[in-house]
Structures are given as structure tokens and as C-alpha cells.
Length: 246
Ligand code: ATP
Image 1 (cartoon, rainbow, N blue to C red):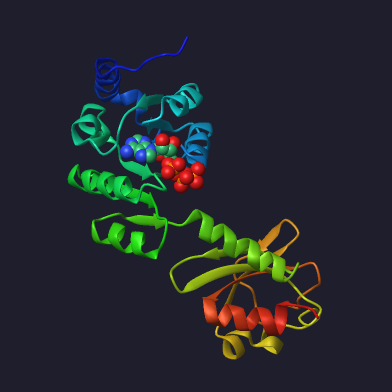
Image 2 (image 1 turned 135 degrees about the vertical axis):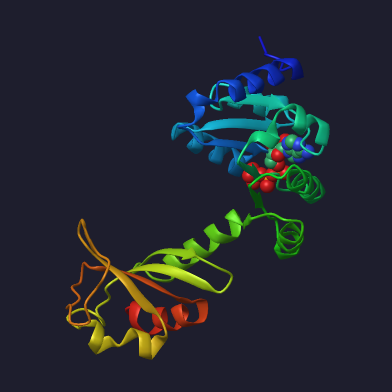
């Protein structure tokens, strides 16, 4: 039988949690609003890592799917400030807003969370315009999972030597690349990646070993993996010139 969640039940649960805080101090507390593919996956991972997760969605089917995964799963409309207060969301340190398609609901929920003085608010954005508004109204972290995944896959498609690509800011990224035929047998000094491409090799992986302070004289072997940081433009130049074997 489907279990229905009543506010009194939620309030008692969260009050108990606050009163018996000692037992919860070891775990971090999160709320995930919106249990689509992205929010659902965050909720699953955080729960698997042993975190306390309050999962909120207005769709009953989603809540039924997550009631045995999250610490607590509640059917609620996140654009209703009273409801969020009643759920004790204001006592949670980090809230993830994963409402995607409904930009209006995502913005309104974020405004309410900033008014509730949540320490950290992470929001999934649909586009750059959405991100700009989210940042203006106080979201600490704005993520674009589809766009980021698209970039990572595109880079790995360009060359099998590009193993991973991670955006660190709007203009800077980190790439993990296999030492190409062009690089093999040379040292970092020979390649002079910083002077020639404006990128920095921050680490070299050799099997299980990671060298986080690579020496300029280290000879690069075919199976080595370089972790390189730089501006998107410089990384693209470095990839074209040195990483992609023709
Ligand atoms: P994904 O790509 O991650 O699957 P999406 O970008 O398509 O998700 P939506 O399906 O629009 O995002 O929303 C994700 C979830 O957010 C849905 O399960 C939806 O029920 C929930 N949701 C939307 N609006 C609200 C709201 N106001 N309050 C609570 N939950 C909401």
C-alpha cells in the first residue's frame, strides 16, 4: 500500500533529529529537491555514502521510488515557503535544487532557500540565462550536468588519448590525457608545455602511482597519464598539437 506523508509526521521526525543531534553529528545533512534523473542520482549516491538525505518531490511516484533510499522522502511543492519551513529545510546545511524543466519553480525555490539562510545551495541550471539569475539570487553553486557531460564525451570522442575533461570554472578546465606518440620519450622541459601552450602539468599518473610534483626532467612513457590544467583555449591548442596522434 502506498504510504502517505503528513506534515505532522515530518515535523516530529525533524524535531527528533534536531533534539538528538549528537547521533547525527557524524553525518552531513542534505536535502535534494526534484528527483528526476539528476536529483535522483545525487540522492542515491549521498545515501549510499551514508549521508542523511531529505528527498522532496511533488510527484508521489517519485517519492515512493525513493522512500527506501533517502533518509526521509516527502511529497511537497518546493515553491511553498511554509512547507519548506515545516519540513525543517532551514536546519539543513546543503540543499540541492534539481528541478530542471520548470525554470520558474527552480528560481522561486532558490529564492526561498536563500531567504531561509541555507549555507550552501546547489542548483541545476537549464541554460546560461537561468544560471545568471540563479547566481544573482544567491545560489552558491550552479551546475549544468547535461552540458558538462556533453563536453566530456565530445573530448573523449575527439581522441582516445583524452581520458577525461573537467570544467573548473567558466574558462578553465582540467584534462586527463594519455601520453601520445608525439610526447613519449620526451621530458616536460623538452615539451615546454607551459611556455608553448600556457597549460600546467599538475600530476603524472604511472600505473597506481601519482606523482603530484612532476620534475621537468622526468621522461614521459607511453602508458603515463598527464593531468593538465589551463584555459579552455590553451587546452584545446595543447590537445590539437600534442595529444591527438594523427
Ligand atoms: P532530469 O533531466 O534530471 O530527469 P529534468 O531536468 O527533466 O530532470 P524535471 O523533470 O523538470 O527535470 O524535474 C525533476 C523533478 O522535479 C521531477 O520529478 C518533478 O516532479 C520535480 N519537481 C518539479 N517542480 C517541483 C516543485 N515545485 N516542487 C517539488 N518537486 C518538483
